[in-house]
Image 1 (tube, rainbow, N blue to C red):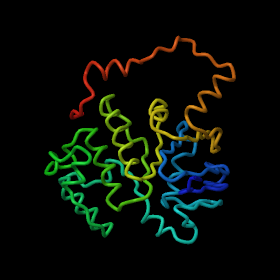
Image 2: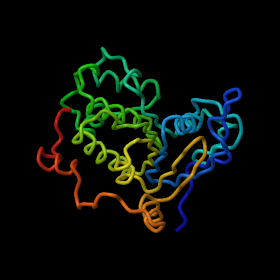
Image 3: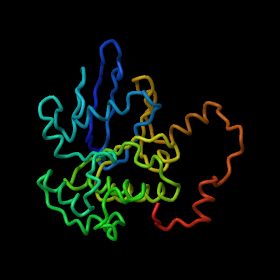
Length: 254
């Protein structure tokens, strides 16, 4: 059965004066996949996502989200997507229950704060203020708020940056749970092990262009087929696996 395209980007260009940040990017995202947009800082990936999210205007090209033309109805696109806010996007003095109620009002949606917090292992923090949360808790809550408007697609911009290995792995599990509920996930990350673990497919962006787009396994196989060899023998585990195994993967406050 052919997969349905939920995001279509065709010949996307973004210019800032004489500088072209995005140079004719084209790609599709399929329904219910985890799609990674990878690249060094300044490659154009964040600009590309902000255009799809209706947060930044494009110079040229076409974007369709869930069949909706960005040029014709950006307001309709906003209703089917969820965008992870950075920490500065929350009122630090409100508790988590109050913040969820606030977001429900903004989206004109109903959600049970207790059930939503339970899904993200935050039920015991219902009365805690956002500013009192640890880094891992803040990231889990920020993903929870993207689901309030029941989006078909959520966008996560470097969701595990600054987290310790346990909090990072727990967030990976959470992202997979979100996808298992039928939500398409678009993620940017600088952690290649994260992209390899989570993504069904990923696009590598450099200097405003897509230079590769395949599944992580295919990209790795293509590199090896070209004669690439690691200088160090590849072991069956890495130091992060050792850390997780010895300190326990159970959810802890981090």
